[in-house]
Image (cartoon, rainbow, N blue to C red; front, side, top):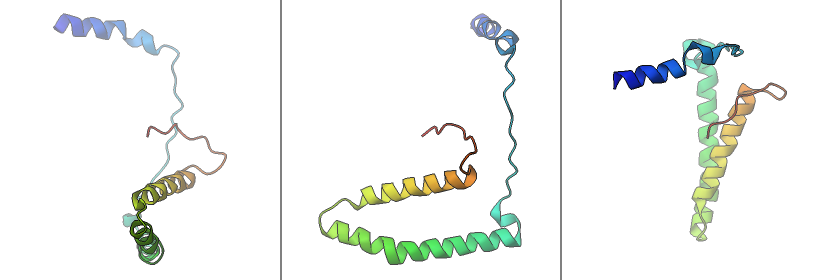
Length: 102
């Protein structure tokens, strides 16, 4: 078994990486909780988003469910909107972004 493992490693050894020099982009990230400003931003977002969910989204979901619809589809759409929004914030228009894996 060791011979097979070593053989596989030899087949894909250092030669496989000759000429491969990926661009490494380092983006500094600071957790919001590490500064007073970050904590303020996070608290305001959670408060505003909670209010939005409570006052705008939940009544619509209840109406859809009450009418026999599928509110989960709206929740899924909102989740996708949030993912796209986060993606746009992290990688503004014109900035190349890595391919999505999901």
